[in-house]
Image (cartoon, rainbow over all chains, first blue to last red; front, side, top):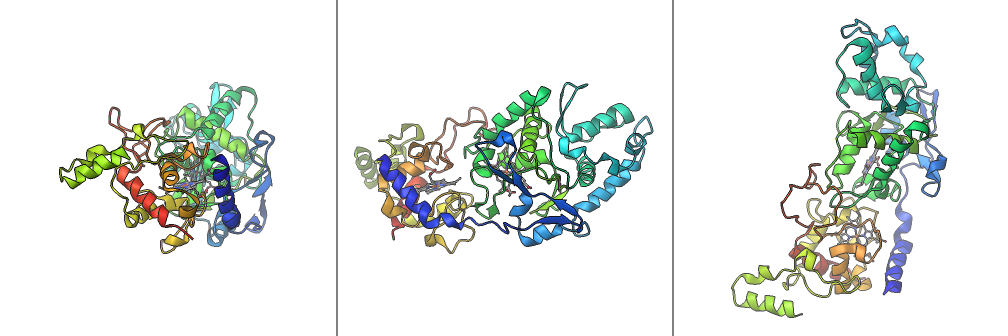
Length: 283
Length: 159
């Protein structure tokens, strides 16, 4: 009985297994003719046994979508980045301070985005970049925190990402962040919902394959926040997670929940070595 | 077999009780990964089966499986094997088992179980992202008759 099963599948795989070609496997991403982006590299050590190589979602998009990210004038996300530059320099809250008053030029924040999410000693928990921004808003500016993935929060994250483009993702997974990272890893491999699928079933076992009309990528977050053409706006990492979990016919976690913070840390660590390329363009 | 006879008898007598003879998901009896007995006793309709397999809001098998047989419907997935010839490769009992719960045949497979109502993690209410309402009986992805329709269509996928 068992032998028969294997034969059936092997035959099918032989006949049709070669169909899973990528959009343009060899395309390289250079933004504005000067920022070189690593979109394919060796997988970080913690992925031993799971993946040898990691690839940005950019590699899986069609030529038109890829091209939009190669020049800031064609990248619709850059409008939000411009808005954020204004917010950066505008005083807000009871302290009458702007981001710039403490941090200087936005460009001086290069190197921040690649290491987030990151352990925050004072808070005693892992902070996403949006949480850190809110910490500044509440505790240093006396301003209202932004909701997770609200448009201002995403624009600011997009600005902080844009000034780090080309720098390798380098999220720490050891030390005090380790237990959160482990929790995220557990979630990544847990099959959920009536369709009983995990992040790994789609993005580790099936990247490069079509699932109906979608070309499955490795589900990397180095391009976030991403401008989704489908939604005509920036989308945050945790909102993206929510959509993916919902598609398994599961009860999702909410953006901002401890589970999604842990998952963001874990998924970010899977991209260690790829360049920050956000705000990216996806369909 | 016995179940089929009863169902057919009920049908013939026009009592409309055929529905009651459906095998509930928790009562499906597997022999290995095969399910020999029809879930309803009513022969499957291959035309309906094709519709279910290629329709996003129904079986949506097409999201993972391609086939020449439904080449007219756009966007075939590549996650599972191409289904042309599945009717040669598998018996009816095997096909029924695969659709009911492919995990019985392929350990840990990506393919969802289409006639199963328990054992889920964080079961949602379809694609709403909300929890399945507590206390409500869980409905399988396909009804018993839809499984039979799909099996009938798969049987036609010969080469």
